[in-house]
Length: 463
Image (cartoon, rainbow, N blue to C red; front, top):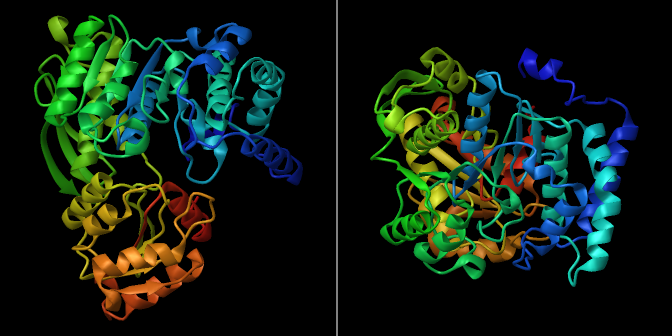
């Protein structure tokens, strides 16, 4: 972590047992509420909490991010750019990789345990008031959203970078009035809740575009693009489209990442930008992040101009995205990637094929039960020599036997091994990879869900 993070007064990491115990107490209380995959589409509860708290979400300007894949990476890039331009930031993202405190960041670092617990205890009485006055009690995600907005107002931050939990229109985060909205690529995910086509899903996603705002939009499927543009017209928002008003002009693989040239909203190029992340999708995320920050600062469009190129280069060179094609071990190489739907898996496959020269890659896969698991595995099939299927520890996991049955259909029985425990699955995959004999050309990919990656990260001691 940087010196800046170490000096951040909001990210104290206590060594004693007591703070950890109090955090567990809070997590247990939150766990009694509706989980993130159980929804009652309404803003009534979060609006009621905001009213009682004095509208903390209006104490700061914000950049709101939705889409299917790439939201968290884009949010982290936006945050890094704003920090480099010396703005105090709050970032709210989900889900977390290892600790729930990661979801709320101040000045680029996760909120400290004491501050997290203190924020929860501060708003807890008001949450209970909302619970008593509503037909449905506040959910886990709604309470965390309230905590984030309260923490950002209390700090106070200069700008908040907020990632949607699911959808957009009725997502709990959508009580902010963001001047800039970002929509990353939309694909099929959560179809039981958001719609069965990208156009239907875009109806919910585009609901974060506010009247008079600027919408920074990634390249989309035609039906999604039409839906987003229709929403923008309805609310008189300005649209900046990837590939037209901004985009990636050039990219090439570099050691530890890639070197890219981005075209900004003013039509000018930002050249020789290094990002320590792999894959075309991360270059796309970088272009979205840059355009969002330009829009926030009022750069580009009819005014032209560009941001300070040295600061932009500095910001992107320091970007990280834990659990997104993250190398955590060598000999053999172990990669962690949080791909959890077919579109995410396809992006991961393309990035690995481009940036790594594996002669043999073994997958360790554990998924949630509410995902398109067959589509996910089919996307990975051409890349992976063999797979070890397993399960993570959450209630949403797909049982290993069910996952194994799907994996056998996709890979064939001789390419599938079953290990119910994640630690044993990783060990088995390493053994299979090492059978190649060339440690420099073999690797292991742990994937299937953010939870799986987070648990693997802890097992492998990544900090």
